[in-house]
Amino acid sequence: MKKLSCLLLAGILTFGLAACGNSAAETTTASSQAAEATTAESTAAAETTAAETTAAESSEAAEAEVTDLSGSVTMSGSTSMEKLANAAAESFMAKYPDVTVTAEFTGSSAGIEAVQAGSVDIGNASRALKDSEKEAGIVENIVAIDGIAVVTDPANTVADLTKDQLVSIYTGETNNWSELGGADQPIVVVGREAGSGTRSAFEEILEVEDACAYANELDSTGAVMAKVASTPGAIGYVSLDVIDDTVSVKTLDGVEPTEENIKAGNYFLSRPFVMATNGEISEQRPEVQEFFNWLQSDEGKELVKTVGLITVD
Image (cartoon, rainbow, N blue to C red; front, side, top):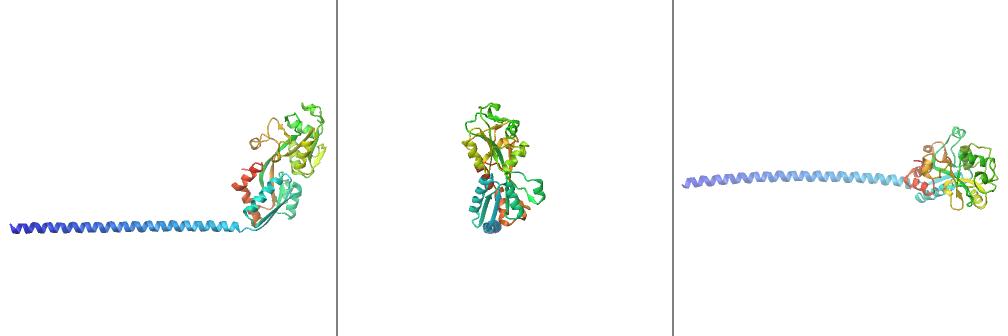
Protein backbone atom coordinates (compact mmCIF):
# COMPACT_ATOMS: atom_id res chain seq x y z
CA MET A 1 0.00 0.00 0.00
CA LYS A 2 2.82 2.33 0.93
CA LYS A 3 4.52 1.49 -2.37
CA LEU A 4 1.36 2.37 -4.33
CA SER A 5 1.09 5.73 -2.57
CA CYS A 6 4.67 6.52 -3.45
CA LEU A 7 4.05 5.69 -7.06
CA LEU A 8 0.96 7.91 -7.13
CA LEU A 9 2.85 10.76 -5.53
CA ALA A 10 5.69 10.44 -8.02
CA GLY A 11 3.22 10.55 -10.90
CA ILE A 12 1.56 13.66 -9.58
CA LEU A 13 4.90 15.38 -9.13
CA THR A 14 6.00 14.44 -12.64
CA PHE A 15 2.76 15.78 -14.17
CA GLY A 16 3.07 19.00 -12.17
CA LEU A 17 6.62 19.58 -13.27
CA ALA A 18 5.64 18.96 -16.90
CA ALA A 19 2.73 21.41 -16.65
CA CYS A 20 4.95 24.04 -15.09
CA GLY A 21 7.49 23.53 -17.86
CA ASN A 22 4.85 23.99 -20.57
CA SER A 23 3.44 27.08 -18.87
CA ALA A 24 6.88 28.64 -18.61
CA ALA A 25 7.57 27.92 -22.28
CA GLU A 26 4.29 29.46 -23.31
CA THR A 27 4.99 32.51 -21.17
CA THR A 28 8.43 32.86 -22.70
CA THR A 29 6.99 32.55 -26.24
CA ALA A 30 4.26 35.10 -25.52
CA SER A 31 6.80 37.51 -24.03
CA SER A 32 9.01 37.08 -27.07
CA GLN A 33 6.12 37.75 -29.45
CA ALA A 34 5.06 40.82 -27.47
CA ALA A 35 8.62 42.11 -27.54
CA GLU A 36 8.79 41.56 -31.29
CA ALA A 37 5.45 43.38 -31.77
CA THR A 38 6.62 46.27 -29.62
CA THR A 39 9.86 46.48 -31.59
CA ALA A 40 7.93 46.47 -34.89
CA GLU A 41 5.59 49.19 -33.65
CA SER A 42 8.54 51.26 -32.47
CA THR A 43 10.28 50.80 -35.81
CA ALA A 44 7.11 51.78 -37.74
CA ALA A 45 6.59 54.80 -35.50
CA ALA A 46 10.21 55.84 -35.99
CA GLU A 47 9.91 55.44 -39.77
CA THR A 48 6.66 57.48 -39.80
CA THR A 49 8.24 60.21 -37.67
CA ALA A 50 11.27 60.28 -39.94
CA ALA A 51 9.07 60.51 -43.04
CA GLU A 52 6.99 63.30 -41.51
CA THR A 53 10.14 65.15 -40.48
CA THR A 54 11.58 64.82 -43.99
CA ALA A 55 8.32 66.07 -45.56
CA ALA A 56 8.15 68.97 -43.14
CA GLU A 57 11.76 69.89 -43.82
CA SER A 58 11.16 69.72 -47.59
CA SER A 59 8.05 71.91 -47.25
CA GLU A 60 9.91 74.40 -45.07
CA ALA A 61 12.80 74.46 -47.53
CA ALA A 62 10.45 75.09 -50.47
CA GLU A 63 8.62 77.79 -48.54
CA ALA A 64 11.89 79.41 -47.52
CA GLU A 65 13.06 79.36 -51.13
CA VAL A 66 9.94 81.25 -52.30
CA THR A 67 9.82 83.51 -49.25
CA ASP A 68 13.37 84.64 -49.96
CA LEU A 69 12.26 85.95 -53.36
CA SER A 70 13.52 89.43 -54.17
CA GLY A 71 13.79 91.76 -57.14
CA SER A 72 11.25 93.68 -59.19
CA VAL A 73 8.36 93.24 -61.59
CA THR A 74 7.53 96.11 -63.96
CA MET A 75 4.31 96.50 -65.93
CA SER A 76 3.03 99.01 -68.45
CA GLY A 77 -0.04 99.25 -70.66
CA SER A 78 -3.82 99.17 -70.59
CA THR A 79 -5.66 101.72 -68.45
CA SER A 80 -8.58 99.28 -68.37
CA MET A 81 -6.35 96.91 -66.42
CA GLU A 82 -5.37 99.53 -63.83
CA LYS A 83 -7.64 98.16 -61.12
CA LEU A 84 -6.41 94.58 -61.60
CA ALA A 85 -2.75 95.53 -61.95
CA ASN A 86 -2.71 97.72 -58.84
CA ALA A 87 -4.57 95.15 -56.73
CA ALA A 88 -2.26 92.35 -57.91
CA ALA A 89 0.84 94.44 -57.23
CA GLU A 90 -0.29 95.32 -53.72
CA SER A 91 -1.22 91.74 -52.78
CA PHE A 92 1.94 90.24 -54.28
CA MET A 93 4.21 92.70 -52.46
CA ALA A 94 2.40 91.95 -49.20
CA LYS A 95 3.20 88.26 -49.73
CA TYR A 96 6.76 88.90 -50.91
CA PRO A 97 8.00 92.09 -49.20
CA ASP A 98 11.38 91.98 -50.94
CA VAL A 99 9.83 92.21 -54.41
CA THR A 100 8.80 95.59 -55.82
CA VAL A 101 5.96 95.62 -58.36
CA THR A 102 5.27 98.79 -60.34
CA ALA A 103 2.73 99.56 -63.04
CA GLU A 104 2.22 102.39 -65.52
CA PHE A 105 -0.92 102.88 -67.56
CA THR A 106 -0.12 104.12 -71.03
CA GLY A 107 -2.53 102.14 -73.23
CA SER A 108 -2.40 98.59 -74.58
CA SER A 109 -0.35 99.25 -77.69
CA ALA A 110 2.20 101.25 -75.72
CA GLY A 111 2.45 98.41 -73.21
CA ILE A 112 3.18 95.86 -75.93
CA GLU A 113 5.79 98.17 -77.44
CA ALA A 114 7.43 98.58 -74.01
CA VAL A 115 7.70 94.85 -73.33
CA GLN A 116 9.00 94.27 -76.84
CA ALA A 117 11.66 96.94 -76.29
CA GLY A 118 12.64 95.32 -72.99
CA SER A 119 11.85 98.37 -70.87
CA VAL A 120 9.25 96.45 -68.79
CA ASP A 121 8.70 92.82 -67.83
CA ILE A 122 4.98 92.74 -68.62
CA GLY A 123 2.91 94.56 -71.22
CA ASN A 124 -0.72 94.83 -70.13
CA ALA A 125 -3.18 94.69 -73.03
CA SER A 126 -6.95 94.66 -72.80
CA ARG A 127 -7.22 92.89 -76.13
CA ALA A 128 -5.89 89.83 -77.89
CA LEU A 129 -2.42 90.20 -79.38
CA LYS A 130 -2.08 90.90 -83.07
CA ASP A 131 -0.41 88.32 -85.30
CA SER A 132 2.46 90.72 -85.95
CA GLU A 133 3.08 91.04 -82.19
CA LYS A 134 3.10 87.27 -81.73
CA GLU A 135 5.45 86.86 -84.67
CA ALA A 136 7.83 89.26 -82.93
CA GLY A 137 8.09 86.84 -79.99
CA ILE A 138 5.56 88.44 -77.65
CA VAL A 139 3.61 85.79 -75.69
CA GLU A 140 -0.08 86.25 -74.91
CA ASN A 141 -0.74 85.32 -71.26
CA ILE A 142 -4.47 85.69 -70.61
CA VAL A 143 -5.03 86.35 -66.89
CA ALA A 144 -8.71 87.36 -66.90
CA ILE A 145 -11.72 88.04 -69.10
CA ASP A 146 -13.45 91.40 -69.20
CA GLY A 147 -16.86 92.30 -70.51
CA ILE A 148 -17.23 95.66 -72.23
CA ALA A 149 -20.35 97.41 -71.04
CA VAL A 150 -22.28 99.97 -73.08
CA VAL A 151 -23.40 102.85 -70.88
CA THR A 152 -25.48 106.01 -71.23
CA ASP A 153 -26.38 108.88 -68.96
CA PRO A 154 -28.73 107.77 -66.14
CA ALA A 155 -31.81 109.49 -67.60
CA ASN A 156 -31.71 107.57 -70.89
CA THR A 157 -34.82 105.38 -71.26
CA VAL A 158 -33.54 103.05 -74.01
CA ALA A 159 -32.91 99.77 -72.22
CA ASP A 160 -31.62 97.50 -74.99
CA LEU A 161 -29.59 97.86 -78.16
CA THR A 162 -28.98 95.36 -80.93
CA LYS A 163 -25.56 94.89 -82.45
CA ASP A 164 -26.73 96.56 -85.66
CA GLN A 165 -28.09 99.55 -83.72
CA LEU A 166 -24.81 99.92 -81.86
CA VAL A 167 -22.90 99.86 -85.14
CA SER A 168 -25.29 102.46 -86.56
CA ILE A 169 -24.77 104.76 -83.57
CA TYR A 170 -20.99 104.59 -83.63
CA THR A 171 -20.69 105.08 -87.39
CA GLY A 172 -22.95 108.14 -87.21
CA GLU A 173 -25.85 106.70 -89.21
CA THR A 174 -28.17 107.00 -86.20
CA ASN A 175 -27.73 110.29 -84.38
CA ASN A 176 -30.92 110.80 -82.35
CA TRP A 177 -32.30 108.62 -79.55
CA SER A 178 -35.83 109.02 -80.92
CA GLU A 179 -34.81 106.72 -83.79
CA LEU A 180 -34.32 103.98 -81.20
CA GLY A 181 -37.48 104.54 -79.20
CA GLY A 182 -35.99 107.06 -76.81
CA ALA A 183 -36.33 110.79 -76.25
CA ASP A 184 -35.89 113.35 -79.03
CA GLN A 185 -32.30 113.99 -78.09
CA PRO A 186 -29.00 114.02 -80.03
CA ILE A 187 -26.69 111.08 -79.44
CA VAL A 188 -23.28 112.11 -78.11
CA VAL A 189 -20.84 109.37 -79.10
CA VAL A 190 -18.05 108.95 -76.54
CA GLY A 191 -15.10 106.60 -76.94
CA ARG A 192 -11.47 105.99 -76.12
CA GLU A 193 -8.37 107.40 -77.76
CA ALA A 194 -6.51 105.69 -80.62
CA GLY A 195 -4.26 102.94 -79.22
CA SER A 196 -6.64 102.07 -76.40
CA GLY A 197 -7.17 98.34 -75.96
CA THR A 198 -10.80 98.92 -75.05
CA ARG A 199 -11.36 100.88 -78.24
CA SER A 200 -9.53 98.29 -80.34
CA ALA A 201 -11.57 95.45 -78.86
CA PHE A 202 -14.84 97.34 -79.19
CA GLU A 203 -14.25 98.34 -82.82
CA GLU A 204 -12.91 94.92 -83.83
CA ILE A 205 -15.89 93.10 -82.34
CA LEU A 206 -18.31 95.44 -84.11
CA GLU A 207 -16.13 95.54 -87.26
CA VAL A 208 -16.12 99.34 -87.32
CA GLU A 209 -12.37 100.01 -87.22
CA ASP A 210 -11.57 103.52 -88.48
CA ALA A 211 -15.27 104.14 -89.14
CA CYS A 212 -16.48 105.57 -85.83
CA ALA A 213 -17.84 109.13 -85.55
CA TYR A 214 -16.69 110.11 -82.07
CA ALA A 215 -17.76 113.37 -80.49
CA ASN A 216 -15.23 112.77 -77.70
CA GLU A 217 -12.13 110.56 -77.63
CA LEU A 218 -10.92 110.25 -74.05
CA ASP A 219 -7.70 108.82 -72.64
CA SER A 220 -8.96 106.69 -69.77
CA THR A 221 -11.83 104.50 -68.64
CA GLY A 222 -12.55 106.87 -65.78
CA ALA A 223 -12.80 109.82 -68.13
CA VAL A 224 -15.36 107.99 -70.29
CA MET A 225 -17.46 107.14 -67.23
CA ALA A 226 -17.41 110.75 -65.99
CA LYS A 227 -18.24 112.20 -69.42
CA VAL A 228 -21.15 109.84 -70.07
CA ALA A 229 -22.57 110.27 -66.56
CA SER A 230 -22.61 114.07 -66.86
CA THR A 231 -23.66 114.49 -70.50
CA PRO A 232 -27.34 114.15 -71.55
CA GLY A 233 -27.68 111.88 -74.58
CA ALA A 234 -24.16 110.44 -74.21
CA ILE A 235 -23.19 106.83 -74.91
CA GLY A 236 -19.88 105.15 -74.23
CA TYR A 237 -18.16 101.84 -73.60
CA VAL A 238 -16.16 100.84 -70.52
CA SER A 239 -14.76 97.79 -68.75
CA LEU A 240 -17.33 95.77 -66.84
CA ASP A 241 -15.42 96.08 -63.56
CA VAL A 242 -15.84 99.87 -63.28
CA ILE A 243 -19.63 99.96 -63.59
CA ASP A 244 -21.49 101.89 -60.90
CA ASP A 245 -24.82 103.67 -60.46
CA THR A 246 -23.64 106.93 -62.06
CA VAL A 247 -24.51 105.51 -65.49
CA SER A 248 -27.19 103.35 -67.10
CA VAL A 249 -25.97 99.98 -68.38
CA LYS A 250 -27.61 98.68 -71.56
CA THR A 251 -28.40 95.08 -72.45
CA LEU A 252 -27.20 94.03 -75.90
CA ASP A 253 -29.46 91.85 -78.02
CA GLY A 254 -31.43 91.36 -74.80
CA VAL A 255 -28.42 89.98 -72.89
CA GLU A 256 -27.00 91.51 -69.71
CA PRO A 257 -23.21 91.86 -69.32
CA THR A 258 -22.83 89.23 -66.57
CA GLU A 259 -20.12 86.64 -65.90
CA GLU A 260 -22.47 83.77 -66.70
CA ASN A 261 -23.51 85.30 -70.02
CA ILE A 262 -19.93 86.14 -71.00
CA LYS A 263 -18.58 82.67 -70.16
CA ALA A 264 -21.49 81.11 -72.03
CA GLY A 265 -20.65 83.22 -75.07
CA ASN A 266 -24.06 84.93 -75.09
CA TYR A 267 -22.78 88.48 -74.62
CA PHE A 268 -20.91 89.65 -77.68
CA LEU A 269 -18.83 92.47 -76.18
CA SER A 270 -16.09 90.68 -74.23
CA ARG A 271 -12.30 90.53 -74.46
CA PRO A 272 -9.24 89.03 -72.75
CA PHE A 273 -6.99 90.81 -70.26
CA VAL A 274 -3.47 89.94 -71.33
CA MET A 275 -0.19 90.24 -69.43
CA ALA A 276 2.21 89.84 -72.32
CA THR A 277 5.84 88.80 -71.95
CA ASN A 278 8.79 88.85 -74.30
CA GLY A 279 9.21 85.09 -74.53
CA GLU A 280 7.59 82.36 -72.46
CA ILE A 281 6.96 82.83 -68.73
CA SER A 282 9.53 80.12 -67.99
CA GLU A 283 12.17 82.32 -69.61
CA GLN A 284 11.52 85.27 -67.28
CA ARG A 285 13.32 86.14 -64.04
CA PRO A 286 12.24 84.15 -60.92
CA GLU A 287 10.19 86.99 -59.43
CA VAL A 288 8.27 87.46 -62.71
CA GLN A 289 7.61 83.73 -62.95
CA GLU A 290 6.36 83.67 -59.36
CA PHE A 291 4.08 86.65 -60.08
CA PHE A 292 2.34 84.62 -62.79
CA ASN A 293 2.27 81.50 -60.57
CA TRP A 294 0.59 83.56 -57.87
CA LEU A 295 -1.99 84.98 -60.31
CA GLN A 296 -2.92 81.41 -61.28
CA SER A 297 -3.26 80.28 -57.66
CA ASP A 298 -6.53 80.23 -55.72
CA GLU A 299 -5.51 83.47 -54.04
CA GLY A 300 -4.82 85.14 -57.36
CA LYS A 301 -8.07 83.92 -58.90
CA GLU A 302 -9.98 85.26 -55.92
CA LEU A 303 -8.40 88.66 -56.49
CA VAL A 304 -9.47 88.57 -60.16
CA LYS A 305 -13.05 88.02 -59.02
CA THR A 306 -12.79 90.69 -56.34
CA VAL A 307 -11.99 93.40 -58.91
CA GLY A 308 -15.02 92.42 -60.99
CA LEU A 309 -13.35 90.33 -63.68
CA ILE A 310 -13.83 86.77 -64.82
CA THR A 311 -11.30 84.00 -64.20
CA VAL A 312 -9.90 82.14 -67.19
CA ASP A 313 -10.64 78.60 -65.94
